Length: 88
Image (cartoon, rainbow, N blue to C red; front, side):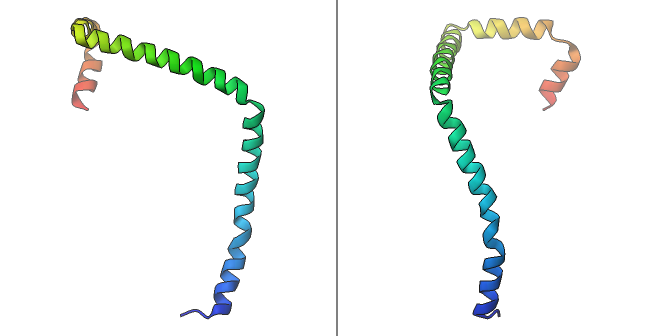
């Protein structure tokens, strides 16, 4: 069992280890603040692109065209790739 003095010594020994983490967090926050507008544009474009792709994949699945695409891809795949994907 440790004494209160030993606990304080151990706690004070580990206390400075959070300082680098705080420095990185503060620095990254400052960097992101400066690029907030550019990141907002990228996020907006990304949402539009991903939403469009999701609608396209959904339409392909609902119409059954995805099965024809899959069949064509399997016909043209090398044998080693088919073996690899079916054994995993």
